Amino acid sequence: MNRMISRATAEQLLQQILDLGLPTHYDYEKHRLILLDEQENEQVSFRLPLTTPPLQNLSLPQAQLVQYVILLIQAGNCAMGYFEDGVNLNHKVFRSYMVRKKQGKSQIKYLKTKGKSRAGSRVRLGETAEFFENINGRLQEYFERHEIHRIALSCSKTLLPYLYDSKTATPFHKRDERLFKIPKHVHTPIYEVMMNTNRFLQRGELLYEPIHQPLITQLLPENLNEEPEEEDEFEPEEMDDMEEPE
Image (cartoon, rainbow, N blue to C red):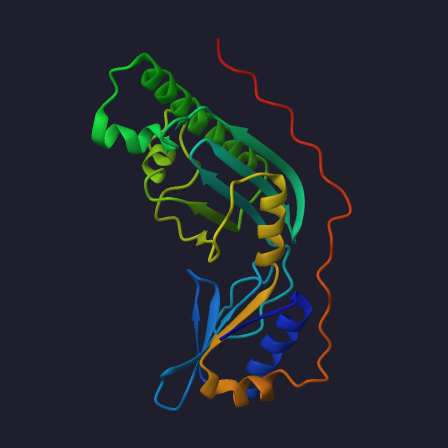
């Protein structure tokens, strides 16, 4: 079973868990708190909002403005943005001619079976290289201007090598501890999909078996008010495009 809870409720729940001194384990990579039984078996997985700072020594984190990047990549489509405390301050959408129209298959996947002899294939490969260079160029701007605490990423394993091996370097390495794999299927990356993903990441999520429902009921009493999800009041303007080298 799973249950999504608002950011405010997640903060109250975290406070209650720590106040009760329940046996727990914090998983930094997945930003979740695992509730354990007396034999240290997992009972409940509590994914914290991305806006909640990492837990230190299983104590309530000090108030901190969490600054993060959301990066969503699929073949020929990318949506990315810089966020502070859940608010999107900059965003960019990239599109590229990477998909073979008739087969609906990306040129990268096609290469594994048919090669790259045709002119159209060479064009798509060139577009692919430029696609990832543009992505990394914008990432570099974010990392130069801001201290980034987390990198929320959704990208297939097939495309990851093209991200990290681009001529324009990625401002983080593939094993960077700040990387956070988004635990959710992401549709074709556009601005609206990125903002929906951000709303998801601002909420907490409880995963548990039905047998542990009494514990959930204890931790989340019925009179605990849930805050409705907030809608974005405006769409921030994109940053000016970087000049292309001659």
